[in-house]
Image 1 (spheres, rainbow, N blue to C red):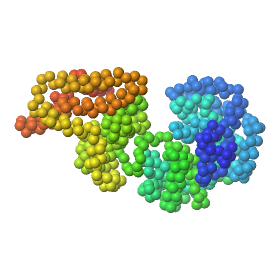
Image 2 (image 1 turned 90 degrees about the vertical axis):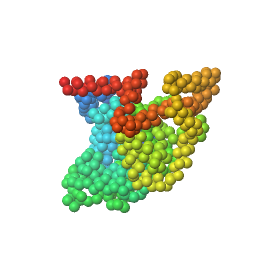
Image 3 (image 1 turned 180 degrees about the vertical axis):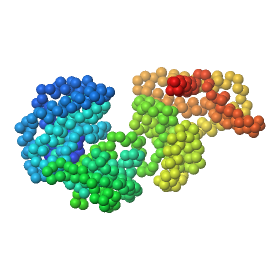
Image 4 (image 1 turned 60 degrees about the horizontal axis):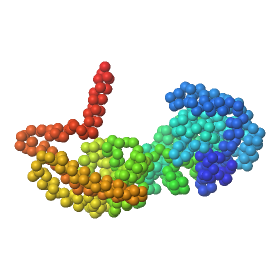
Length: 559
């Protein structure tokens, strides 16, 4: 199948790499011409072997902790496949396609698996690529080597790790006209290190991109944001990979005047970044792109989705947002189940106009819930208090927040959003009346409360509220019961907050007691001791158990 016959729907026939190249060719991107040897050819090739069924059975028994067995079996399969002849039908089909594209041209022969360059799994670099292939004999030999490379150690391990069956992954081969570039490299349409979505990251070196991909050279690094170059790091590039006349490639020393020269001019950096943005827009996802520059023209050799980025919450404006993980604040790092996420959305009233409305403050990404704390950080006073409170929970979060709020981008956003009072008021609008109503109760409890029987008086209203909602829910069935559950969750927290006016007392009393001991007794007493290790507190008991475990481990290490 020639590239002009292929698009992203042809993945079963031409694999991920082939489907992407055909898709980009049809979309008008500058892709060198070529064709794909389909997966049916691979299936016919494998079917010609009387040993592969047994080999597949052995592969299915392998585990990740058996590297020696994986290596031995992989080599056995590869050696066997190199002895199998390619059928005449497949040979003639390849020969016909090769003549159409150009017999005199040199080609890059690349493996393209059906489980490759997917939105959820990359498989990049798992199979082999052969460059500067010339003539039909070299081409057929490269094709056979690509088929056998489906059973390299790293390809076998990757399939085991990602749960792909060895029999269910097929291999197509991309035969693409070879470009002999002055400069080549990689481009990520987001910063792969920080995950910054509006930063395009470009790596560039002289010669073929193989030098960069294989780690032979350190490449120049450029970053582009909003069509401006924001960072340039010029590397010392001592070597480069070049094609040779008879076919194949060779690594050579770069001329001294090129070793510290900027590989791409500023104009070309911006031109390439714009091309990357167009490709990302076409695919509607962030892309990892292989490119090269030859004769003042860019060529795209491959584009695949970036699968390692953490997803971000959906936002509907172009502003900078700061999200804080709810679960990480409680050291709960695992992803939440959908029902758990739904319950949190219903319970928390912040940012909601009504109970059934979606929550604009708490958002989901990657199976985790995040607070949008941006409005709080716009206000200098709230920002200082908020970061101080976060520091008590997690110093790394504090450091990250301080770095964000001190950045030029955030400071500009804060100036443009000075009216934070209205935004913060809107967030806490559902519970503000409850707190205002509770202030006199808190003052009364603080100065005039008889502490006897306080536990019973504190818990009784809570039990009544819970019983009321439980009774209401159990009176209905079917869809009506689900609606009442939803309504109850939306009201429950607000009603509990209104009845929990005993809870704030320790947060007020303990700091006052600490200050008065210094003032009256001139002693710095640790009044927080009153609050520690209370029996029946699950969190405290877990902490004590972890402490005991640490003591045991420490003694073992000393021994």
